[in-house]
Length: 527
Image (cartoon, rainbow, N blue to C red; front, top):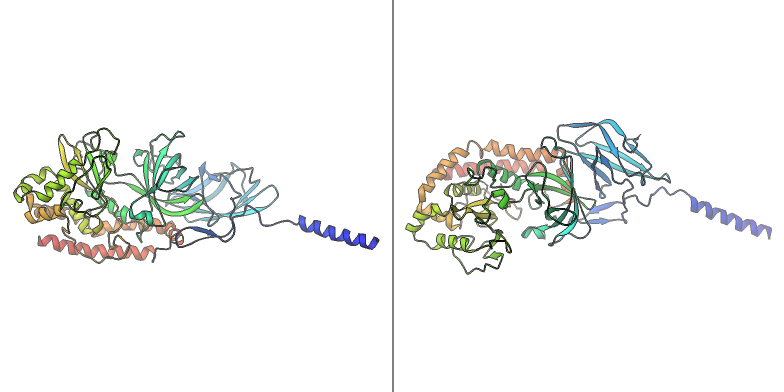
């Protein structure tokens, strides 16, 4: 009996010690996570929250990426940060180390960090379990989106945090936080795995609030452009920057703060604690941007190729509908006062499509701004913007009482500079008037010496805003930013539709534009 008692006692003690053995794998340690081809995360093991919570540097939030078990913090490119303060949640972390140096909550780290530095972080909890992270220093602003439900077509409530390393130069704040309403935006791009988002800044009661982001306009409505179809993740921004450099609204003397295009900056976005890639945070192209006269101006956006968007004919319209024949209302909208009226656009298209040559020649200058059309014609040809001939454009007028002529504003320029709207390569070609009836009639009738105006304007732009060196320099700005911060490599790891490195794609863009420039120069000379 005594031997049996000793046997059971031994078994019991073995089981107790086995159960009390220290577990080196913390239950909150993030597990390995990979991204599939659709950009969705698929965990090999269930992931768990990070043990290091509310991690901040100099009072600004660091973005967490559960895919790489890393935190991100931005430092301005070309600058460094020395003697920075660290904060974290002490209820989850009782001891914290940066590169094996212990740092207290609120403590100062007397070392220097610059872009592309990667530091090792260790967080230890009350039972002496350790979780290891990396701190990645990027050079681009970071945007953190936290949504409690799936982001879809309808607005959902979420949180927005922007940390801007260039806040001093832009006279902004290091971190801007806000409640938001967010939804997916775009037409064809809705089907892409990497989504575009429209963001509305709101207060706790969901009332719009205006804030200036990245030194841009003070507003509540913003866009996060995913640029997914573009191999370079920059064409829309490069081309819009080019347009802004030589064109503005025809009534700029009356509205000196107006802009006939958007401005924006590259950012890195984190969605619900996961790295989501490079996005361009941009202003909206709307009444406020164009400074269209309230109650007397209108904006229409061409979305699809139709006879109406090509100015070739008209069909009946319904003023209770927000869309008509490939167009959509941009301002005013349904429910606004005064109510929107498709009649202005209908009459404009009907005149272009059906007027006699004599009437067209005599009256078209009072119905469209000829100089704006000249600029737009040069713009879409020098870039071979085939997707912007009769769609992806705004057609607007400032004031029906005194300035009722329409003018162009470009939008969505991913399919340019050697790439088609589907993302494939596009050979050099002059698209000319294509099937745009406005261009065709202006060119064929040579209204107001339209050909001469193109020649004169090209002579101004070819050695300046649209020169080979100027365009190459603009491409280089974004290439350098995304490669020197390693952001493009991170984008490639998350989204697998990029087929080559950015250096190769940028060189292709440079060479393509050089050839297109020469072809267009010859074309203009032949007019």
